[in-house]
Length: 122
Image: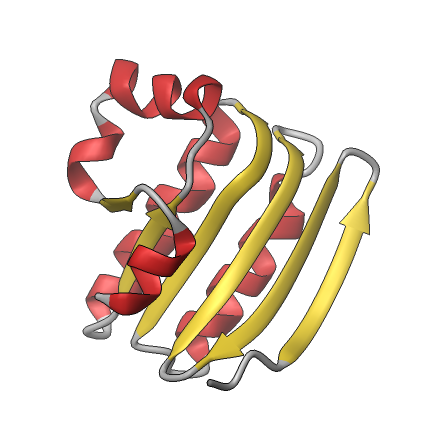
């Protein structure tokens, strides 16, 4: 399977990598997703959608924190992807991040996966 690295970026408390895996793009976020770092995730998500990636999987396994700004980045990317027939999937959320999605009800609008492997297998 193709697991080619497309790009990566860091800004203080957040590191983002993008790689291809078959027909999916995998965007991995590690660290804290908040008001100060959200743009670092927004840009590659929107680029994947703009480039016509039908399926984008966000690997949340190393995401330690997500505030409302981070949640809005993910929701915005989902809307843009769906507008062009694509989808955003979230994989491997830690309990602290999953709680934000549970409290806000945002988990109901995403396809959630326990592991990255299960997200890529679907």
